[in-house]
Image 1 (cartoon, rainbow over the protein chains, first blue to last red):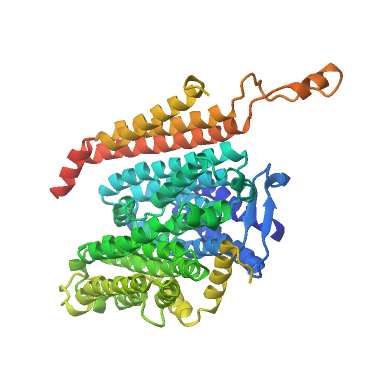
Image 2 (image 1 turned 120 degrees about the vertical axis):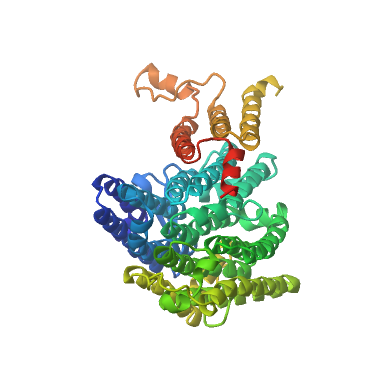
Length: 491
Length: 126
């Protein structure tokens, strides 16, 4: 069976999704969702432990060999991303049960889990496949189910934000198809490895730079790179809390992975950075994202919206690492991919607990929560410290590597701006912590600690934030290996 | 090649720009979706045009004996792969439009309008 892991990783959730929809029992469809995501985690771990040493798994779908059939191709880069997606899903799904019961109408819950599993399937599929058109198909599977999940939020603005996301997301996906189409017209192949061999012969034509431009804009829309992030704050704010925690920790990460895969594997770093000089666009946009959206986050009254803007800033850090186009920069970007999933997952889950008990995530509703919900708010504090980048948390590890990579590239002012971004994170996290711990609580509203079924998944992520902040051996090892593969360096 | 030789591609560009402009400029949520569909459809034509070869026939494998075998080796056929890809993309397009329209129905139920500006004002006044 382990030979078929790459395809089973995707097929098992894909089959689980319609079953969850047909069963129409809240508990059973939730159990199926748990099973699907735990299976994905098992498969992801199996794949990662096989490719950690530098091996590459190539799986021919249906037995059709690579350039003709669809190839699933796993190396350290996507095994890493698959593990992130699967790990977050296997923590977020158990968490979702209570949260969803409170926030989603009961006759829709089984359909909710069906869309949830489909979203997971799509994200895993994008990460595992070695075929560019397959990327588009899985991208749409994950995006369409994400739009549906977001629209299930309680507030009616969830509908308009899902609609807005649908329009912008579809434009992004269509841009990606145009880019893929132009590459296919020029080379006659859709396989990533085959493309990377055939593209150099036609690099000088006008079609390939145009394809590259379409793909870059499409990915930037999907990963919410400033200024194409406009769909993100509303979508994260009004989606059901569990959905926000899941999507914020996974969807944009997978979009970053797509960009990396196309830039480095399909086009090659030399074309992307020396010929097209995409770093000249990405670096300033990443810095503007870090500074401007952190500033916007400081002024938010709704904590979920505050964290959403902070997410755009954190995406800026990842893209900053990518734009350095060095092994060190990529390592920092890939580390932050994992670390940001841990911290934003924890923070949004903490907000889900507050939503469950208080029914609001506005800052003024947090008054006195430090006493009433000590575990939830303590988790928020640890997650917040991680966003800031305090030592002993994962946030510190990725910031450390990022600053070192910037200094190694001689960009000391970039390193300084990264520090400024961290200081701004101190301000917006402190605004929440101050109200929660220092404001007096309103009397007699009967707010108690969140149920254990939500606290345990939350604290699993918080513990991971600390564990991988202290013991970063595994994460840095895999991220470095993945960065070396992308840059084509053999260690 | 002359301009007429690229007729399909001109149509692609015109449709793409019409669709894209409609998405950006219209405030009516249904019209936006129509624009999005046009935009996606133009890409379908781009792919299918690329698969066409002048004088090419359908890619059907001809029997392996007698004269047919010789004929088969000379047959010029259109590339079937873009058609297959676009079949998938059409399904995705339908799903996107259907989901978009169902969101518009729900928005209409919640707000009583499908005009972006009115919706925006009603949320502001909360």
